[in-house]
Image (cartoon, rainbow, N blue to C red; front, side, top):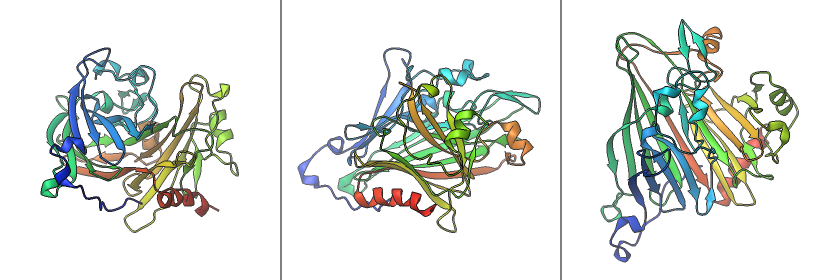
Length: 363
């Protein structure tokens, strides 16, 4: 669905590229987020999003024109801290956002594996990045691409020592975010590896009448909760967006693992969400060779009203469960592993129809 950019700008009608789009850097100066570095990206096609450098280069706010795409938590942006690595304390710093990355050593519930205490969803989003480059677009030179590259290091004496190099790229005139995540085990021993993309959607994109879109021949409820078993019961439509419900107050959520069908030999697939009333959707393109499943979290609580699609390389239920089921990934000493994916804001009729057609394929 991602289209080649054909937009051309009339360069005689502006003198500063920021009038069209680009990347702007700033630092929060007030509240709990004070000191956190941020990069705001304007694609010049309607999509604007914010990269939080000190939160693992994850993305919080994202808008297409006046419409927010994502869910933002009550607490908002907080600074990175190792003090929230234990138990379920990750929830105290989860700001929501379009992309919250989880890992790189554990994804899912807190617990113990191989004698190691593991916090919920790992330390990534509570770790600051070192920016290597910010490349601005230059339409006069024929360069419409803009990019941010940074490195996030996780290390300790005697290991593990793992580095993530993340590059985020957008193009003037195109409503898409291309991401390349390359992990490198710089240490001298193998390291368990878990990686999940928590792609969160919220109001007004998420509203009654909207629908999740995917072609998954297999759906497995996670965790055995009553909400998950009821919502993802075979034969029931779990793709329609519900109104806020009292049964989803607190932590009550419905969660399931999806196994979207690949559409080519490279394992590429697409999942997403469409709101026909707004003529707006989001498509998430990725490879099933890199992410074996996609978790769907649905939380229809009053106020905390959100859903997510979460490509993952394991179960998303905890490292010990990945190990038990033979699904635990490992980075050997010196090894590298790369993930490539695209988050695309969809506004054209054909693109929205293509997303909705994914649901027809299941029937």
